[in-house]
Amino acid sequence: MHAAFYQQRTSSQKRRANGDTSVPGPVHVRPILEAATIDGARCMGLESTVGSLTPGKQADLIMIRTDGVSIFPSHNAIGNVVHMANRSDVRTVMVAGRLRKHEGQLLGVDLARIQQDTEAARSYLFEASGYQPDAFEEDFPRLQPAT
Image (tube, rainbow, N blue to C red; front, side):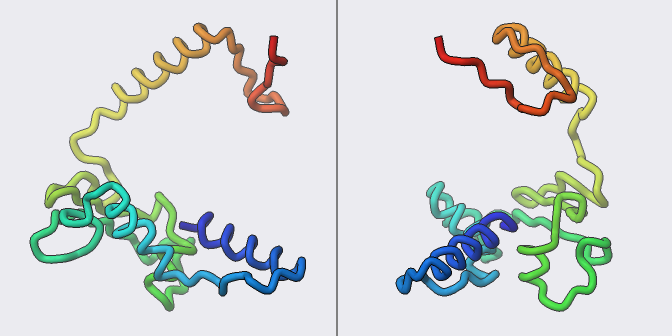
């Protein structure tokens, strides 16, 4: 949401500065939040079950802490979500009415196993591609000339 908001604003400002008189007005926070929720559900054909808090739909909720340093001072709930909230502010997640994260802790997830599987997959891909990672390389990813 952060990126979408600022990309639209930046693009519009640049076009306006270059003399384009057909530039749309600046985007506001509500349409950005809707793009991330109900519009995303609509794009996937799921708007009848998810994407908004409506009786009869799945109880999919994300609860954001409002006392974190990235959030306060809080004066506009939608603006705070679009502009300031980040993943460290997500305290509780409910999917289809079931808690999946509570008080910042994932529930029912074996993080050690996921980390192990992810590292194994990464190692396999690096080996298969011949890529030798360098944590301090400046040109990431290193592009090889086409042959």
